[in-house]
Length: 324
Image (cartoon, rainbow, N blue to C red):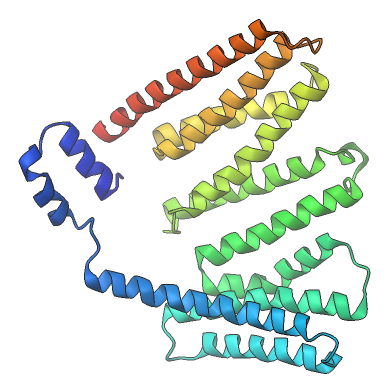
């Protein structure tokens, strides 16, 4: 499960590869990209930049020439660019990478079209409706592309829609009508998607790479903010987050320590726990707002001690993962 770089580092640390053979081992491992690999990278980079350039060119051209352009011309330019992108995506001779770039470009142009529609007709819609409609309209293309970047972009739109919805209306039920409703919504959504993606990666060969870690951040940041809000606003009074946060930490450790070892996920849990513990300590020591030097010094020493302990534990855990 370890990458080639991690395996090579482990062999060097264990003394399997002598120092005089390190250069040769690095060359044999293929860590340094070949000229062909650089050519492929530059080719794909320019392809993606071209797709993004098309989107922003249409957007800024319409915005700059808004007064000189008629309504039909504005819509026609955006729709023509969208049809061009979709046409490239369905072209039989296009490579999979070209099709993915084309569908991503078309998905971004849908947002441009919705923004143009709202500005031209002054619909008065709330911002969350724009992002929700954007996500709904692009869902078929996302399913067809089967591309992790496009899936993450779609989930980002859904996150924005949910966050803006709860900030606008509070929640669909009275119990959710609070400032924390958006964070609960984001935590539940991203946690469910993370669990579904982990299942798909294990049993359906879905790509892992960076998408899972980004989803883990989307799950960990809201629950950490909920815990921090509880400490600052309510002290130690009862809240559902007191049960959800320990369960989230336990599940994070159990899954990414034993089921699918991933040190990045566990390190993220450590950062969350250290942040919450530091804020709780500050709340207990500075309860009355008396910012004394001794209390601040104690908090600084506690942060250094907890950080050093976490680093030592993570290094030991790293060795256990790769040795096993």
